[in-house]
Amino acid sequence: MAVATLWPVAYLLAMTASSKTSASAPDPSADVTSAHDKILIVDFGSQVTQLIARRVREQGVYSEIVPFQKAEAAFLAMKPKAVILSGGPASVLDKDAPAAPMSILRAGVPVLGICYGEQTMAQQLGGTVEAGHHREFGRAAIEVIDACALFDGVWEKGGTYDVWMSHGDRVTKLPDGFRAVAKAPGSPIAVIADDARGFYAMQFHPEVVHTPDGAKLIRNFVRKVAGLKGDWTMRAFREEAVEKIRAQVGQGRVICGLSGGVDSSVAAILIHEAIGDQLTCVFVDHGMLRKDEGKTVVDLFRHHYNIPLVHVDASKQFLSELDGVTDPEAKRKTIGRLFIDVFEAEAKKIAALGKGSADFLAQGTLYPDVIESVSFTGGPSVTIKSHHNVGGLPDRMNMKLVEPLRELFKDEVRLLGRELGLPEIFVGRHPFPGPGLAIRCPGEITNEKLDILREADAIYIDQIRKAGLYDDIWQAFAVLLPVKTVGVMGDSRTYDYVVGLRAVTSTDGMTADFYPFDAQFLGATATRIINEVKGVNRVVYDVTSKPPGTIEWE
Image 1 (cartoon, rainbow, N blue to C red):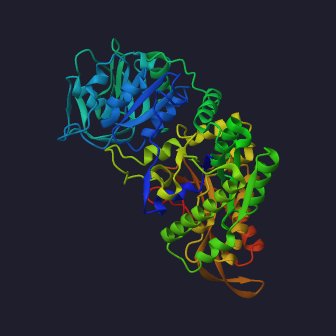
Image 2 (tube, rainbow, N blue to C red):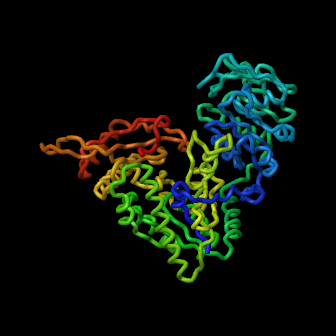
């Protein structure tokens, strides 16, 4: 029997001392992208390399990010039609500075260098890069001094355009075959072009929103320079993923662990389309879900999609073991351990019905989970975060991984969900942490606190939806703070909890800024929460960005 779990495994890896390595990234020659044109992105450690991949995929072209030291092997395996060299924190003048494989630069495919990518391309091809000149960080104006394919239909010779810079070194001498096509105050050679080879490079970052025309420039590289047709669609991904799942699972049975979030829901529907009645979903309610979460999930999968669903109410077990636990990491480990225990017990019950033992464990791993868990130097990332659902599985589970969404970004998962006909209320949901309200209730967890938090959170989200702001916000939630304050209600003294409200805008969750609600909205929301939720007498709003803060209040 094959088993798929799309949420609980998000804890498995960090919570178990003994684990085996997870299934490696799919062989590019065998994955669902094999029939499509591809672009390889060589990562030199930029914090925004993901955005390059997103920009490329917006053009209907599949892209994949690999650390620079694995680029040569990836190039041979993928056979990409073009390559993009990312930015990075290093200097090409450093000893043992990262470099692009010369085999890629000699392969005859178009190459686009961005920031550090421009500098290493220039230096490796015979140009000169120097330090000690004017540095540029943030917004800058760039002047186009000559036309090229990269600028076609976007920038004109003689025009001045806004870009986003982040560099200390700069190119001072061009390699043979290149010409300067744009300049900036801090980088006289800001964009370079070798039209014969299809080599282009720029000192600024076109992938970020602070470069208004950046997406158009990347589009020109993808479509006009590389000549790619852009046939990588969600419909194509859906069809090819279904065939891949069928080939991997065969006649086995699949158990799918549901959270009700976007990733698990989309993965479950995709798996169900592939193998039908071979799928059984398991929804474990650990007692720390949002208001009416359980009913919503059960209704969707049991009644809307007619997928067999086991609903396990394990709230007493979870809350009992969390009694008195205040450390957030201890909470995560406890929840992770219990989730494995409960899920394994349910899997054994299903197996006892004569359907066989488990072979596969599928999970909703996304592409950012994979690339964020490996740094550009090849080891575990310390600058971003490691994702529990990337590292491996407990030995005792004796299962192999199935990861149908491993190649997708979050926004692509939402597109796939719409392609599969998933209701918008699920497709458009804000991210929700695996440990649930446990990490939105700092300090000790009690039923009373959880009930207060559920009600406050539901009112907050209701206010956001009524204001038509839900889709403008990356994530919004309430937090029950571990403090009580004095208040006055009805001429009586109160001593009740404080609720913190959090709402952020973001592209991928890596960086975020607080959502600028107007004072009237915040006032009305606070009034509703205080009036309707017993035990709350004060509401505050968090205006911290990420960094320096995190999105969650853990």
